[in-house]
Structures are given as structure tokens and as C-alpha cells.
Length: 613
Image (cartoon, rainbow, N blue to C red):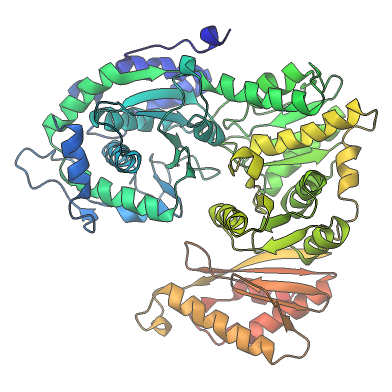
């Protein structure tokens, strides 16, 4: 069976690869790919002229003058004349790479072109060669997958050429999820060419259709910020050395070293096996459960047919399972109110037991019970904490900085665990959980309010599908032990979670061109705002600064709390306020406003509007 599922198409040409991968998407998506695949004037495939640079030369080139990251066309007389000037470091978004891949949005020019993509993929190969210190006689393998975006195909083709040009083998998965790409570095199955040495996921999460980007993995997990910076520096130098001969040779190598594998079937079958194991090896432990999936036209549609149905669940009423990179129904984002309303309504209309919703690349998720109660943000963290603390009593739950005081009380007083509130950013949260374990403090769950959640038992991978499997495990094991009531089993676990009457997030933008910055950076200005707020709060007897805090200024008062912090990437100070009533929330807002109002480069209009309501 595995041999049939893992049938490999060897030695695909770029054109064959392009054609065969499209079977993963809908007819509509194929039409969109055809429309957009020629956006880059350089890469009209029959006119490609590409160079002969060996893997060692490419590796050496990537290490030369790595601090020079802003480059134009190569000074060589044979340089490709149409290469645009690119500031590669501006493509970094924390531990990801993000850019504009297609036209269509005013004021957003394309900066993630096929040549840029090819350089980034080649740089990842060079970086991986350094990390693996592989024997020169061994060819390394990199897998590539993508979500449903309309630019996915052309970027996959360009990445394949970059990798193949570095003398690596390329394994294409087509439409895939981000967690599956990491898993491909761990799976030990030669029928599926696994494990691979590295993996690339082409995705921009929930961002608009014109965006795209990359996430990178090895068997040690996702790459961090420093790794991404290193790769982009290498890519800049590779890009600067492109010649027509390079492109020609990379095209030739790609025609000989690309294979295709249906890895998503492997990944899905592992999820099915996990639920069966939790139920005591019952073949269909979810038989009779009605569970609806909303994939938001992203990559998560497989979950209905390849995970839930083999487990016996009824999935009628599931929606937006077909991949469509224009996302016509709603943003595929479990934090989005419209998206959550869509899955909630589907559950109620179909009288389902449970609803499950994913983001575009399935590394985030949320759920809805049979009554329409949402399990996202603090509720999802509370639910996962309850499940994990049953399995690992007393363990530490690591979360991001914007979780509620009620969640802390729930984890520590009700569940007997420890709540370690850290910084925003899923990689920050995961890395902190790993660090705690390394110094002797046991932690089994790292989870953000955004829906990124990672478990120690799952290699600290933020996997939205695996989070939902943990909920399914609870349903299956409860039924196996004779419990009834459907998703009420889950709802009952969070009954004692205290939730605020009012919860808002406001964004206070910093005008980088304002003279008040005096030539300094927005980050320096933002830190000055935070320091002033901290000092003012300490002098107010009605307010109490959080005794332990890792990000921004967190203060309690009036039965609630506020947190003002500096955005990870943007010139913005997000302000979170939670309180028992609107009146108390306004009091907290006024406390912040009185401190920050004197900073003239800070746009406080959203806060003024809130306190004047």
C-alpha cells in the first residue's frame, strides 16, 4: 500500500513538474496559475538562459562579503540585464521570508520575483550544506510544498531551479501544509524519499492573495531569525553573481533531479493513527460524530477527507475545502471575526458536534462546539492546557504576552499548572518552552493567542492539525470510556475560565517622518514611550505593574489590565485592554492616554476614540 501511495515520478523536467503539480488544486486555481505564471519578464521558460556554477562555487559565492545585501545587476558583462535591484533583508519577517509575488494591489510592487526566489533557494542549499557538513559524495535532498496561493507554482519552479543548481535533489509535494513540511525531515520511509535534509514551505499564512513567502525546516525544527538573515545575505550575493550561463545550467540540472511525492497522505495517515491510538486502537473512534471543517480555501481541506472520514466522522457541511488562492469566502485566519462567524454558523446550521477551522498553511487552528461557542485565543489555550495538564500534572504552559489574567488563574488555581507568560511571536514562545526544559523546568505546551500551538510530544512543531487531533483524542477517549454528550466533553473542561467583559486591541502608530524622532529609529522612540508609561504607572496608586513581565508594560487596575508593547516588525505600539466592564476599560485607557499623549509622533486617535465612546 505504501509503495502505491508513495509512487515517485523521477526526473521531471520543469515543464512536466509544473503540469503535474497542478493536479493538487482546483480547476480555478489552475486557471489562475496560468494567468500569473508569466508575471516575471525574465523567466519565460522557453527563453530561459541559465549558468554553470558548481555546488562548491555556489557555496563559496554565498559566503563572500555577506554583509553586502543591497545589490543590483551583476557587474559581469554577461549579467542578465533585466534583474531588478533588491534589498533582500527587507524580505525578512522574523523567522519567515515574506514579499509581494503578484501584481494587483496599488502601491505594492512585486519584490518576490522568480530570480529572487531562485537565489533564496540556492542560499538555503548553501546554508544547509554548511550545517550538515555532508560528505561531498552524498547528494542532499530538499522538499518543497506550497499553500493555495496563485503565485505558488512559479515560486516552486524557481526554488526548484535554485536547489537543483546547487547539486541537491528536489522532492515536490505540491499542495501541502507547513507542519507536513517539517515532518518530512523526520519521517523515515524510503518509499517517500524521506527523511529529507531540509524543507521549504511556500506560504504567507493569512496575508492577502498578492503576498507569498517561505518557511524553512531541518530535522531540528524551523529556522530562527539569525538563520533567515544569514540566508538572505547569502542570497544577495548569489543574485549579484547571476549570469545567463548559470540559469541555463540550473534549468538543465532541474530537469534531472526533481521528483514528486504524495507526502500529505503520509502526514494525514499519521494523524489518523494518533487518534486511533488514543481511543484504544478502535478503527473508527469518531463514528457518529458530525465534525465540520472550514479550510478557508487554503491547504487544510485534506483534514475532512483524509483524517476525519477514515476515523468514522460525518463531515457533511464542511466548507471552502477547495484551494483558491484569491480566498473569496473569508480570510483563512482563526483570529478573524468573519472567519470564526463562518465556521460557527456552519456548525449551527448543520447541527454538528464540532467545527474546526485552519489558517492557510494549517499551522494555526481553532474550534467551535455544538452550541457555537468558540475555542480560539484564551479559550483554546485554556482547553489545550486542560488536556495537557491531565497528561502532565504540574507542567508549565508557555504563552505569549497578551493572554488574560483569567487564563493565569485558570491554569494555576483550577488546573494546578504554572503559567509562564512570555513574548509575542510563535517562535519566541516555542523557544522559551524549549529553554525552560533545558534548565530543568518541565514544559509540554507552548501556545499563542493567534492559534500557533506546539507540544513537546510533537517535536515542538506549531501544527494546527495536531492541536485539533488532541481535541479529537479527547472526544474519542471519552466515548471509549462510556461518556456521552459530544463536544460538551471539551466545553466542560473550560467552564471555570474567567473571561473579561471587555477585551480590545488598539494600534498606536509611530510616524517615522515626524521631527519628534530626531533622526532616531521608531524602535528607540517606542521604547521611550514605554519607559515613560512605566514611570507614570508606578506613581499611580490605582495601578500595579506586573511583577514578572517580558515584553512591553503590563499593568493591572480597575479589575482588569493593559499591555502596551512594541510590535515585532512594524512602527506600531499595540495596546491590549481587558476589564470587567466598559467603564473599567475606559479608565485603563485614560491611564495610558495621560502618559503617551505628549509623544507627538504617536498616533493616539484610536485610543482617544475608545475612551470617548
